[in-house]
Length: 497
View 1 (cartoon, one colour):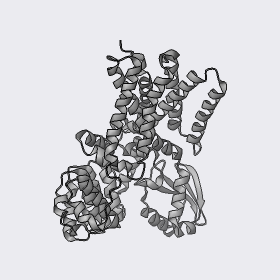
View 2: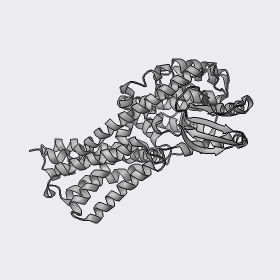
View 3: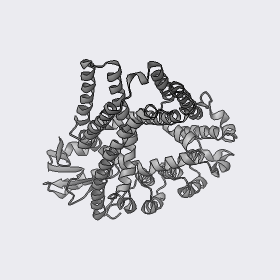
View 4: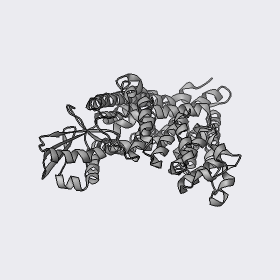
């Protein structure tokens, strides 16, 4: 008979933890979306170009984007907190029963996380993650924990060891290209992976808006309070416009409120005093002042770090626990519990290794200027992509290669993505016309790279094309890339936009 309790115990705990996280994340992203909605409506009324455009803004007050965007925090922060809590309680109850020192140590670490999450200012929603998720998991564990004799040391080691091995294997490829390699070699190579990629890019900017520091936001609002003098305020306005701080009247809590006089300026963020400066200091080095303002206004530094760490470990652990539980449930029809755990662990190792293989198959293969033509004409698309990466990095003219037309007409998104990126450093007029055609490519990853390449080429005539695309696009991520291309081309916001 299948031992349902043992098969799904940890999987159930993780589910309850991420269910709690999903409720909290939906609320958090929804509140952020509402805040964005009113800010963007004020920016629109002031006459500036909106990014995202009106299509995206109208969806902000609805629950759909909040729920789907909140899944990012659920599958990262929620998964990691659920795992850490269940592991801590399991170790405490199984191996140190009645030991108060271990209990105090766990509570101390928990308390330090709460302090770190709020050291730059109290964050109610972030605090709720560190309270509600662990408490939910703890209550469930104490209620449903199986008897000690059910799972022995050997079974526990067999259960945990495969994930440790997979973690060591995958972290060996942890570099700046890891996530791009996962996208190009795993996700974009199959229909399911493409849907996962599309989902991520369609909804990841909603949760990102929750904790982005000011200097990473596209548009920021500001206003003056008690400042007189047209030339005085006008000089500040011209400098702030370069950094996409937009003067918006009537907004209740602007990102930046400036008050005072020339020899004593006060910068506030959402009515909270952040720093003091002077007109002379600001005009002489606005980059430094605004960076300091962004850093001191940032309440989410710890939460961003924790989310990234959770992405690296929390999501893989969640997938492992659930897949292992499924295999354990199936194999337990034919095997006893111990053999079922072992068989499930072996299957998980095989899957993890199979997924990792595409990321290592090119290690040791060197591409240089001498073998570029041969590499671009390779029958292996992975080799062609590596050659395109080399060309883009070295800023080599792509049009000079005989393989130009064949790669240009490729239907493989990953290959076209890197091909389009090389067009950013090309100076042939023909490649510019080819680049414009990729603004209509079916894969949005390629479209985003086409905007990036247009910005890199520096042709001002592309400004009007990009502006029209921003108005008609239904992708926030595409608009973000388009706006960055505009800024790279020297375009500036005005109220006539």
